Length: 117
Length: 110
Picture (cartoon, rainbow over the protein chains, first blue to last red):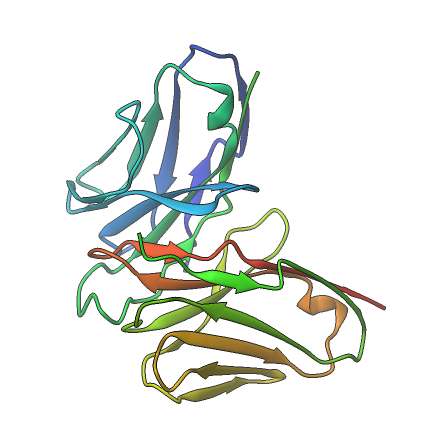
């Protein structure tokens, strides 16, 4: 089956601009999570959406937002970009149901690499 | 935030050597996952461990969950260049969010 698709793969923006990243999950998966990966901080959880509702949110400023559509596709937006937002943004999809204590498998996309100049 | 500490941070070895990487926390895990991320790709799940003392094997990779469920290790026997990558441990946080360690970057040279 097709994997998780993220677009664009690479993008360059300047400080103050905004950016929108897109994620298409695996067919049948209703949960989409977003993570930011940097060399210094590693992988950090941004937010998770399930059936168009934000179910969980990490410790990021309000400049980071997201949404999920009825077909489970998700977008995340970063406004007023800062140099420190340069990172690999990873989207992960999962079924999103079942016992949360035994986390099901996350399927990651290849990421969108954002560079802020 | 429930931190996961991974060690070593970097590891460079030659083909055929054995290695062990570690994942530790001060608090108990309900479960723990190990992922491998290759350059230019997203992480891929290797294994999930849920029972204290559990040992799982995946070909040349052996995963162990500590008895107290506060630590885990990954042992690779006879490493190959194809094992090169970033090894990440992760635990459930809130809901379906995962907390990841910062990873062990492994380089295996021929």
